Image (spheres, rainbow, N blue to C red):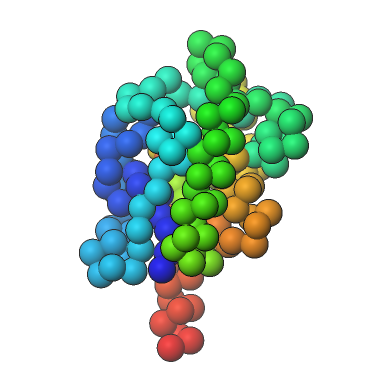
Length: 158
Ligand code: SF4
């Protein structure tokens, strides 16, 4: 079983009430091979919500107390992001998921790149908070951009 970002499956759970439907993800859901998760809703946020970015580092730095997650208006929402990460880890373990596919660039779900905390659309290397926690617990995180290569490899291995 794979766990995937709910917004990639077409659920309108992003901060602005939209989704990021990815056809390959939708197929995995349709065939029963994947379940959805949204770390920010698990953390206690609603839809819509204010956008937030990590300031002072990436998700690993947030987990280690060196960085925080802040909304555009300056509210510190770090605790909710950390709570959502731990809830997602719990769900991944319950589902027996060894691979989780999370939306690129998000302060929760980003893997490899995130926004730089200035709300200017600038991307920097780094992981989101949930991605960092899953990785620390031995769960492989892919972005939707990496999914086609992963699925092709799985087919070759069968
Ligand atoms: S990127 Fe992650 S936290 Fe944001 S809406 Fe999608 S699933 Fe939820």
